[in-house]
Length: 429
Image 1: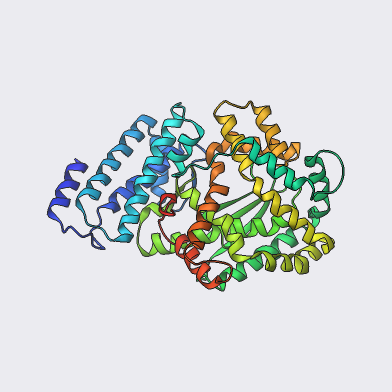
Image 2: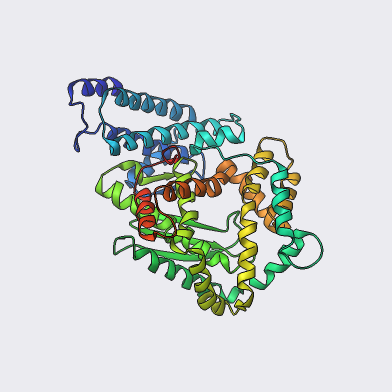
């Protein structure tokens, strides 16, 4: 009945979507409720929700079967296809149409996974996140390891030397809150120079243990976030700005605030009242949060701030900071090694122990950190591509349009426009 009504509407209405006559609005509302329905089967799925409380209560009460959810999503996708074929849309509405289509397709993919269907690592990442990360052979990482080997002092294996070298840059637990507070306050100050945020935006910080992640932003709606920092493993001095920018400013907190303010409150697009974690939205969220560190803290400026402010707060000697960051810059090129560990493990080409050892050998993780990362891979699977591949896509999108180091004003503008839009990975090419 809904499909017939929609088709009749499209035949009779104007071919240009008007503000008050957007047939995607009803689809958006149904999409939100189906995401909440999937959340009843998958505790990690609904990362944030701040829509009508009764929709959430209805999802809990009904607990729709996965087969029923999949059938309903297929119907919405068919309706979206009808809209795309018969309605003339401007760029903004086309982007919305693409967003809803890809998000709904990812709902189907997650439901298929929950029903026991197997996909390869790359098939899953494409179905869920709208992207496939590049694949690198072991020789690629061996070459990077050789380049790093001569930079890290000491004797023994590179992993052991790297771990020992970094011990001098661990934030003491009793200094962590002061260091993190200073980092997030500075990130907030810098972001607000370029980004207009609502006066009531705010966040709360909590320190937790026993998680598979190092930090997490739980967006609560109403322009507020809860940022949790996992203190189970040592936290190094560079992680203060990394986490402050990634989870807060201009990362997840700012991204969610801008979406809520510009797309939900202003446009009344209900699809932005929910955030399904295993969806294309995450590639933009994680990629922009990672790249946001560079936007807010260009390399030389970041090092100056850390030496003058964060190192003293942590009671660390800043004398070795330049050498430390030189090593970290080279080590950062190993980030895709984590993808290969996950790809090999999830595709059945590596055992769990082999994948864990790969992380020790090529990501230079301590055994404890490698174990934590394996738990993350087991919980979140191909989600790992969203960090490094997502960052590379966002970086290319911003910088290829002129948002480079020597033009910070333009970089901030392009970056903020991206965070305020419904653009997905396939729109970053």
